[in-house]
Image (cartoon, rainbow, N blue to C red):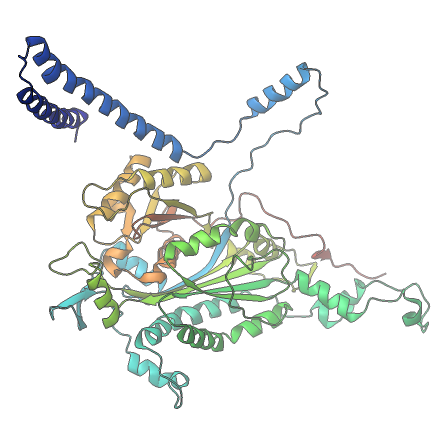
Amino acid sequence: MSRAVKAGMLWLVIAATVWALTLWQWRRTPEAVSGQDIVLHLLVLPLVLTAVAWLAWRGVKRLRALADRPLDAVPTSAVAHGLAAAGERGAPAPAPAPFTEVPEQPVATVLAEALCLSAGHGAAEAWHALKEARVRPSLDPELSDADGLPVFSARVADLDLNDWLLAHGELGHAGSTPLPDPVLRTLALLEAPLHHLLDALAAWRPEPGERPWQGGAAARAHEPMSSLPAGAPSHLSGVGRPDGLATRQARAERAPALQVRLCLPAAWTHDDRARAVAWVRSQCGALLDWTDAHGAPAPEWQTAWPSAQPMSQGSTEAVDATEAAEASPERVWAELASHWLAWSASPRPQLLLLLAADTAVDEACVAQWQARGELFTSHHQRGRVPGEAGVGLLLANRAWEAWCHMPPDALLASGLPSPSARDDIAACPRMWRPQVLRRERSADVIGRVDASGTQALLQRVVQCMAPHADGDWTLVSDGDHRASRTAEVFEALLAVRPQADPMLSVVRVGDGCGDMGLARSLVSVALGSAGLRQGEPAGMALALLVQDALERVAVPLTPPSASWPTAVPMAASTVTRATTPT
């Protein structure tokens, strides 16, 4: 709608209001109305009020745009001018250090991704199916609405819960309360991605051979030698070799660490969640082999909120498994955003295993959605379509890549990487710092949806990732069939990248797989990473979460490269060169 039409409609509304009030006032007064009063009240006053209202609306719109604009860094010239002014006032100004702007860097390398949803049982299979729009929700054979009509759903068709329970008798043994079907179905969705990521984790083991903590000539060459003659009672003098406990503690602090985060639906009871976590732990026996191969401490599982237990920085625990009842998928990234930088820049090689699963293909969930007016039906086509998915990501920080680039003559606390580790990690996509934003107005209101919030989010991505965001974009959105979500994504993309074709550059996961609940927090990222791994998006892939009414999240991913923009070297206390003893 053009500005002239908007201004005309505003003038008509104000003029009609002023005329009605004026005529009513003139009918109440016995005095005669002059020609000057007619011109003043029926023509001038509506024009003045229209101009004031129009200027006020434009001013508020401009203030909102300025408030959404990110703060720019202080330029070098301003810093130099301030130092010069301080010197002119007579104060001895110290010599300033050269001002260099630190470029944005990736926060993680995506070593592997895995998922299970209606579009396929693998990330590559699901990517091709959604890219070619070959997946659509269909009428569910088991679910129906309050009118007895079948509902549309994105069910994983070949997942038979009865057959799965027969293969997992430990979940239904006699004497225990059976788990609800949504909990069992969620665990069944998570099983395949979990084992796929555990197999991928097993491939990142050190090179088989002698370890520093297992003894040997190379290890003994680096042990502090005692100045006492052979056979002297070094245990009495206090200057002998260090005891084994201190050596083991120092080695454990330098060994790689693995963190596991398990995101479960908030609607589960505490007992169901505890049993589900126990079952997931029982499936992760490969973590013991991984920690043993790296000389890391034994796996230690915890169920604590990450805000109380930060994600890294000197923790001596090999595994920090966090089970959290998330309120929304957007909260997963909002909580991780405060820990990304510290975890990524940690000098200790660390891996992060993110797992999420959820299902809305359930009679109770369908009834709740319809009671709240959120279910897609023939009478309410603005509702959501039930979906389900299980997904996982295996991420590595910068120090892990530095460990993969270690020379063959280095002596590490965790052993040497395999010869193919350098090439393997160079073929992995890079994840950049996620951007989180909250809309001022709900996207579910009736009328035209404002895309300025999502546009500001994409502009923030461009500023943080320049010049890596100059190429072609592929948006992997969790938006579904609703016109409000589609229009918001398309308008924001065209505002930031006018040369892009939204019909080719946007992959709408929710349109083919429905609302996957908590699992959609990672599905878009896993699909974008799978596409980059196959080389299909030539430029950046942007995972965009727009399904929520207010919260918006953007997770940028870039294609594999030989190295990060700036490699972080391994700590000096962790790396030593093997020398020949003289």
